[in-house]
Image 1: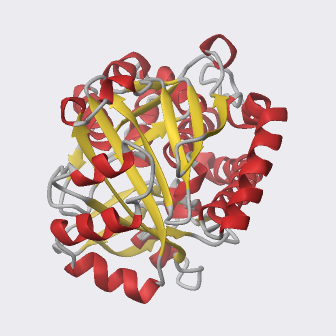
Image 2: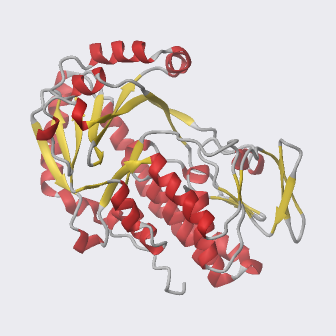
Image 3: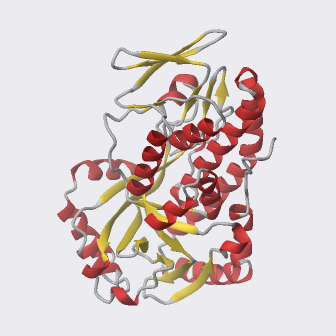
Length: 389
């Protein structure tokens, strides 16, 4: 997401970019995620906001519940009039397809099966060397290759390694016709359930499709073995046992899922620098947050528009100034999200009856008081493409 959106913004800036993808082909990976209003504002600068809304589902509120289904508190995401764009839940495949299609329409070259193994640099150029024996050179190299970034490892070999956050994640997608009482579910709510078994969330990623996901606190050695050996039937059996006492439709969603997606949650410790010479890291490659932040995609989009804008305004020959300003502007915001994500991770690990009771009271109190106002610093942030500097 960071790489393709950056290439599109560079195109708008009149700068040629070529994308090199490690995967051998375009693939459907992952389930879905929410693009927050701040991320949607970035997509609107590319002219893609309306297509994203059509391909996903607008989320108007977060509904917090306990395992019995009792509402704890409902928090609105904020009106479009306030932030310019809504929050949208959509599948990764829909977004990736849209970005690749738009890149092709703009004449942006995308090369597959290019696994980065080395980077060399001189005074004028930087060269990327790939596992297939090929290489390419350019003025700059931007590493947008995710939390397990090869660019980061090659550029900063002593940088912190991705750290296990403590959660095993799984989830699925179902047609609404297969869910009992599905017509009673609010299509504009993203429901977040906290209970002693673990965290569970669900919502519509399009009109006729429900997305659900769960986070379970599991030791790292156990989760790595499980994720490589477990069958869909075994996952279903375990989850039904864990969530059997949760309110409807939680057990139904698990029981009727045929294919389960699985993830291991990692985060990246803070790097001393995001750039070295002609190489810069963006998105999860430079500052991967826990998925609890709910801002991973939007942070990638913000990185893309800001970096392209800085390169446009400073020119490629003054890339060092652009890189330094990029870090200076992005670090404080990313640090706030890092701190917020830690709080979210802590909440998901609460399992005792007393701990859940206290957490419910705290959620009701703080969200009730601050609610939507607490989202202003996240959603109200805008990078205006047309403005210089």
